[in-house]
Image (cartoon, rainbow, N blue to C red):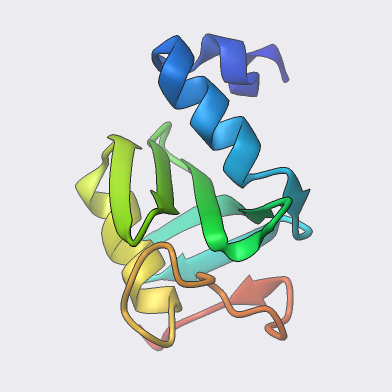
Length: 114
């Protein structure tokens, strides 16, 4: 589990602080599967609400890591990964990685047709 600690991710102190702030009101993690990829995804919002900030943290089954936040109207990827971003976009109803990948009402595993 130490591998997944925020301190182990290659983030600056400012990025780590923004991620922590925008992930404080976290939803339960979910396994998102689609397009030949799968990831354990953590999403959350800032204490002031999702309009103030949202964060996404995804760990892929092949060692990929994606970290992004959306605050002040724009999304920023701190640890970009094309495969994880594509999976998150596929799982989001809006097609944006920060827009609740997997859906708040979705079952723990979301799958796409092969």
